[in-house]
Length: 179
Image (tube, rainbow, N blue to C red; front, side):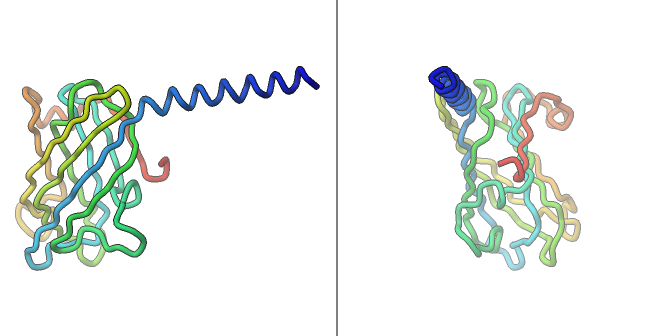
């Protein structure tokens, strides 16, 4: 009996230490997304984002609203004039800060066109340097309005090629179902 208790306690201690170590590898990502006050600027589409560092590593969030929407139950995200806030955990990227973004609308829903002013990203983690980057979008994400694109890519990295960002293999993909 005493041996069983000792083994159980040892196993629980080991499991907790594994959880503590893996939790240290996560960073907290906070995104502020501003929708324009332009007429019909809001959307009901699903918005996703990829956040890149200078090494081409990225974190992918497939649905911002379900991943980390902080505005409360029943809130309507990405509507005209809104400043929406999202926050959640994801793996920390290498020591390089976030410097590029791929913002994508899936084009679904009755109000599928969306005009985004900007996305501001803050990243912090245990033993990780805090970083902040604002990406000016000022573009429609729509197949109905110029530039007729559902994706906006902004690259403020020192020497990365925008086309190269689409092809990088180093990534951390995060789906809302996982979180």
